[in-house]
Length: 540
Image: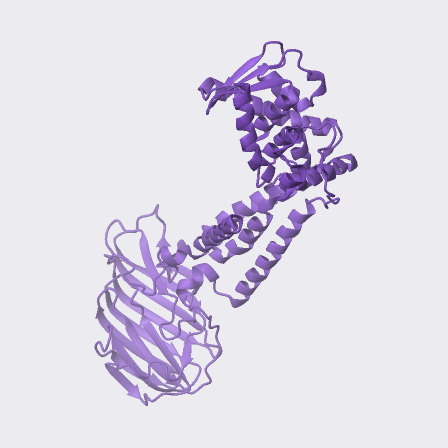
């Protein structure tokens, strides 16, 4: 039950971390309100001339000519575009900037985004060049797709001025012809709008809400003209014009702009990422499975492989050195009559070499541990008394044991390296790096790209388990089969009953070190706790 709970918690943690990596833009500044985009700009726009040409496909080609009076110390001008459509949350109207000039010459322009990518900002000017004070003329040419709305869009809004038949038509052009994102005072604005069909009527307001009437609003055929004066910073001029042409199709996303940083602006892109996520998970699982050896069969064994100590058995069985390897080895040496264990207190054990100890009969791992603790010589002794010096020596002995058992397995021809299997670990690290880069939106990509890299990372994570990078030889598989069969006997609930451990201390003491090495969930190990105490008391 605890294992199941731990597994559930691990998966919950993994999914939670992935969710944070993907969804953090929602918490870090995404908003549905453009708000104030910047402080007021001291540059005064004396004249703004805008010409909007709207095609039958709904794409608008805009030319804005801005004449501004620049005080000393200014480098250029800012232009802000709100890329959302307040009447259709799924529509994006991101401008495509074709050219920018200042006083007839190409101008340096840097594009960036603000307010959760809702605002596109053009920073026009060279930071190393200060404009001469006075009038300068900027011209911006750009295109925006999908500017035509269904005819009833904005029909319920009240306008301060109008002309012609303002009843709903097939299609409507509903637009801030002077954007509220201008940070500048505008003395005079002159607007021309050309639509793909006959304009039946037009309405206009200056400012938010009802606002005030526009100047000289008129329509002639396909063309609408309007003027406005004395516009304070962030004051929009809004026009709604009806036109009897079919409303062109446009891309409408099934999510709002706040989700663009996560999902991007393409439904097909989301589908591709979901497909890649599934494929990455499958590839990760397959890559890990390719590193696993097929089991040879594990018939029940009533004794360990001949000549092998407990750590050797566990290493051949799991291809890893068990946590209790050092204690198991000392118990094995004691059982073989090489050392004696004396418990002087709960945390103080004395290990001494038995006179005439049969070192030649013990396994290489046992000899290595005995040598590391100076127990391979007459009169050798070691105290595990909890001191720093004793702990340092035990750690050194543990490292020696680790190296010895790995060397033994190679030298005995039981394990061979399989370096090609390490590629799964390399790929796992690469996936983690790409996951982190995707989560911070490297190259501006939406955070959904975390998913395929995350799927591969978690699916291939078992590639770090012991056994990857080595393979058992034919002889190694034979020993593995025997060791695992013996482990089955130790781990089975009925093992104590089979061997009647309490009555047969010869088996009990012989198998206790193996149970200690394979401590996880082994019933014999539980009984072994009592035996360790009993043997220690007897030795004392």
